[in-house]
Image (cartoon, rainbow, N blue to C red; front, side):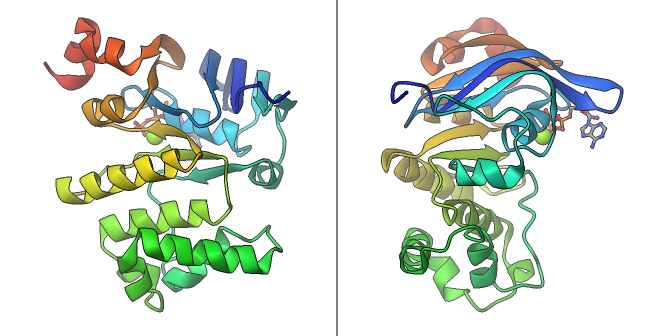
Length: 239
Ligand SMILES: Nc1ncnc2c1ncn2[C@@H]1O[C@H](COP(=O)(O)OP(=O)(O)OP(=O)(O)O)[C@@H](O)[C@H]1O
Ligand SMILES: [Mg+2]
């Protein structure tokens, strides 16, 4: 199954209680690929990532990781399968130190030496987090909190990183730096599924993209094709 995609979602339907949010979504991310998911507020992007990480249950359809069926698996099983989720709003433990927040990402690992090495790798990637390691995460700036949330995701040693709203509320300079780091992470072999409001940035970064509209995939393809598409330029870039 080595040629199976990292993530393969087929005909996924999901929602909350009686309210269906996702309708027949099929999407794949190949090993090492960087794919973005775009769509307006309330389209279902966060719900989709929550399904992939086992937080929201599918009502039908399937989710497979590396060719293995993981539909409605527990979140911890998805983490063990290599899926790490950087949630919308970052969700750090604000009264815990930066270091302890990072270590939370490794809670299922018992390879202590590798965890210590990965912690150093995160500090090298984001030196400001090393400077702030003993400080409460709640005292970090918005950009630093996003670095910490991404670092926490990396501490799970993922092969697929799900990122929900990379740039929301951040200054352009902070966004630039985060984008550079995402490129590095992706080059190191980690596949990334990125949800991003800034459609231009997202498509410039990603290999491919999917557009979700009212819970359905309305368009998908190579980033270059989506970037050039007049309907996308008008709807999501205001061009
Ligand atoms: N916990 C919940 N209970 C009930 N409905 C929810 C819940 N979370 C989200 N929804 C609904 O599901 C729909 C999709 O929401 P979702 O958060 O997935 O959208 P999104 O594409 O991530 O939007 P945004 O760009 O604003 O983050 C919305 O109509 C929302 O109101
Ligand atoms: Mg969202």
